[in-house]
Image 1 (cartoon, rainbow, N blue to C red):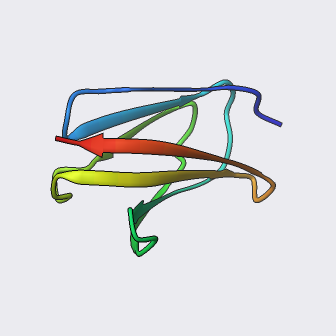
Image 2: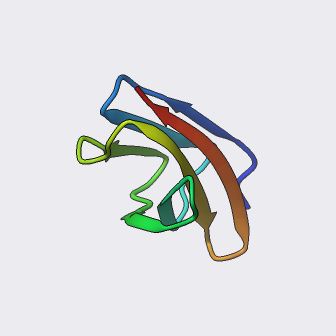
Image 3: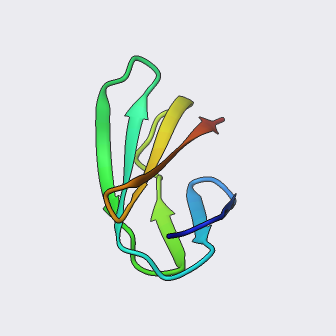
Length: 77
């Protein structure tokens, strides 16, 4: 079971680092809750190219191994 998560990056690239190797997905939703895209968890360090997203506020749902979820707020300026 993963314990931590770190997020950083320069737009439009986002890096999500998990505390340990995991499988799962990242889901992107807009501020109205509309599903935008999904990305697979590829290991400890995960790079997401968000260049196709317009400016705004988004929710990134990290779903690891089907049981652990964390929601992150993402602002694209």
